[in-house]
Image (cartoon, rainbow, N blue to C red; front, side, top):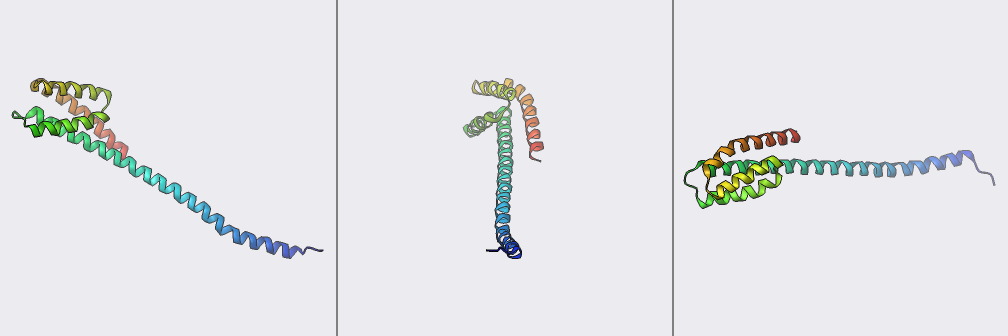
Length: 137
């Protein structure tokens, strides 16, 4: 039995023409999945940075209320305690030490000493927020 070369070539071309769109679709789908995973990862990263900035901002605001106001209400202390507990999780070791010291002074109602440390602490947290801003761009 003789195999016709033109028939064989035609069969191969038909097979490749049938297979080519399938392979292209598989490759394209894998690429799209990887792109989507990168987008999701980037979105999570941006949300994480935004959340950390918000925690630091809330902490700074509530800390300022505690050390500046003369009449500290329970509501202000509760707001501070909540933001302190959340923000300390993300602080650098240096800021963490300052935050713990300030918190102990607040608990002992040594607000003048706490106020003196607060300025340095807030400036340090400002630097962390600026670094987060740079990281998110």
